[in-house]
Amino acid sequence: MTKQAAEVAKRRTFAIISHPDAGKTTITEKLLLMGKAIAVAGTVKSRKSDRHATSDWMEMEKQRGISITTSVMQFPYRDHMINLLDTPGHEDFSEDTYRTLTAVDSALMVLDGGKGVEPRTIALMDVCRLRDTPIVSFINKLDRDIRDPIELLDEIEAVLKIKAAPITWPIGCYRDFKGVYHLADDYIIVYTAGHGHERTEVKIIEKLDSDEARAHLGDEYDRFVEQLELVQGACHEFNQQEFLDGQLTPVFFGTALGNFGVDHVLDAVVDWAPRPLARVANERTVEPVEEKFAGFVFKIQANMDPKHRDRIAFMRICSGKYEKGMKMRHVRTGKDVRIGDALTFFSSEREQLEEAFAGDIIGLHNHGTIQIGDTFTEGEALGFTGIPHFAPELFRRVRLKDPLKSKQLRQGLQQLAEEGATQVFFPERSNDIILGAVGVLQFDVVASRLKEEYKVECSYEPITVYSARWVECGDKKKLEEFSNKAVENLALDGGGHLTYLAPTRVNLALMEERWPDVKFRATREHH
Image (cartoon, rainbow, N blue to C red; front, side):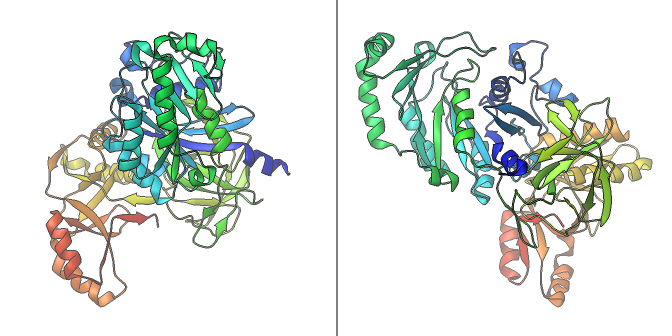
């Protein structure tokens, strides 16, 4: 096996998906602790301490205790290299979250054991399904009151349309939480409270049918054995192929805050989740072990650090190897660039990189020339597919406080749109500027960044737009006819693409019916 093939085999690149407050930031901290990346896990905002969770960036995040921008963390674990992509988890997230899921090979779904499957989780699972991403599940917060575990598994299957195969099973919960039982390997992992911030040796009781297990479970023993029989009779068994096909999810139980069960999940990612997969480009399929370098940009972020007033383009390497100082072709512009300063990420510790392989995420300094969806290669003209714009769900009209600053406003919005912070629409029939977003918080983020970075103050007004659809039609004459009829609701997006801004759901349905030759698309591939 070549060095490159060996490095690729070691990589595991995954994202965490969850509803707000299911414990995603805490589990991220504990995963890093497993990789010994941080000696003491920085507890999260609710602890009212001054230390912020290590993966939360930017001023607004610091104020609100939420992770707005997707960060990337790389750490070693069990002779593997883990690339963990954190996704915004609060109530209002953004398109970034969706797009991050295009750059990973698997995902970890975190559920709050007291609440089960929540709306945001459903939306993220829908995006995972576009590429049949393998999902590992972690039911969190067993140190609190949780719902009946069997009921939780039923809900995963019914709502998320995926088979659930429990790997561990909880023994009690809240004050009576005693640990978990490993169903296939017949041993108990004992829970001891109070070790949330350190790695501890775990006590294991071999065999459920043992005096030690009876003593540990006490009066609960018979009831637990009975429940297990029911579980083993009713639940799916783990099947590796079904997992890789995105049809089945292995389920683990634990408490991220108590640092219990997180290592089981990380072991599952190493043992079962796929190494970096082949990626589809318009021209051909690109294999990770190919010698020549290729990668695509899935996210752009400004000012990850006020000390560095720059923009970083996050790139997923699909094949070959990055070496410091190498020459790459920026396919969209046709220019060759020498990259001597790519970054690897450990939360906001930004380090320069000597080499990186398929599956790794690297950061390129971007002075306004790189856009989401851009491909970099060693010369071949490739365009990777599957990094779409998603139709915004919320819209606002922008109002400028100082009319003399309209040029700065347009420039700022153009750049923020290229980064994926928002989508901008310029209506054909007015001088309005309309912003589209997936979550309300994106509007706040845009306003504060316009003020901080472009010295432009703006406010928003409500506007009657239900949804946006990108318009395509093979017949030029038909498209012209449609454009004349629908001009009141047509706009160009930030990339100059024709967009229909539907005022209501009924209107959109009517237009689709009336104009069968016109395609109204809810996603748009970059370029």
